Image (cartoon, rainbow, N blue to C red):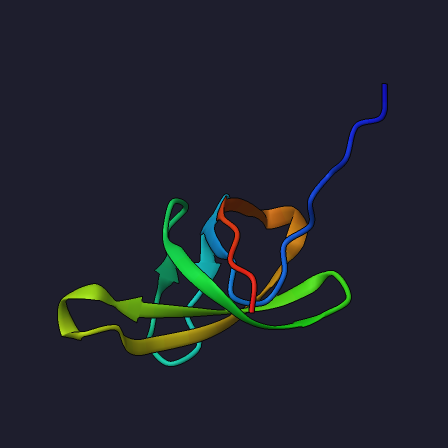
Length: 77
């Protein structure tokens, strides 16, 4: 039996497995923070962290290796 591993791609919703330094603000985004992949370059994904209470306004854009992300839901463009 063949096992198929689905990778993480643009528009997928992901969750951080480890804390990641903030780019636009001081501190870190804690493990469990969710975001949307907006771009990808090989194994590194650019993840948008947005504010759900501000109509999805972007708070930060962080670069995260795929190995430090958990796929929450897949979305095709």
